Length: 205
Picture 1: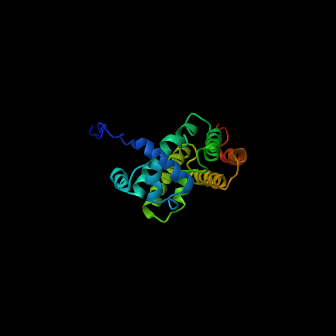
Picture 2: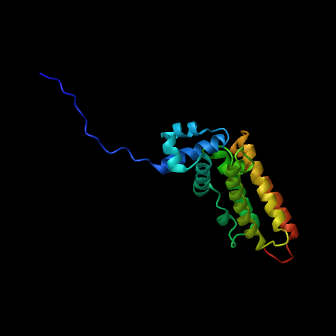
């Protein structure tokens, strides 16, 4: 009897799941930062070879931009909801900073991916993408505040942005969520006193 080689029928290759790959990339970028990751790290985690990586995402910086956008959509703060026009401003700020404390301390990775990316990386394109997204968030906060505190909108917005940056950095440094919440509450109380102090008499915040 002559032995014959059994040939398995060819099946369709497993489809490349872009969303799954993007989720893995986002988690890595958030946990380690842009500079600490190489294309080899990303391809290994995603499970594709370099040619497929570049074909799917263009470049490491472009993948980072897509990961930032996914982070904003999936894990970003609900700024518009917290600072909705029908909510008192001090209550909205308290909600926003509490959200920040919870997200930065209890998420899949510590800190805010956008804030930390905007602090600067070796890649100018990557840094610019994070900075642009952070600026957009600031613009939304500023617009919500300017409708009620036009003369102090810049100062209040700066206070909120600086507090969120501090919460993010503290989370990255290992400060536990409960302490982040306590810090957010103190910051909210201080800002509430400031808002009450500048509100015109007879005006309800």
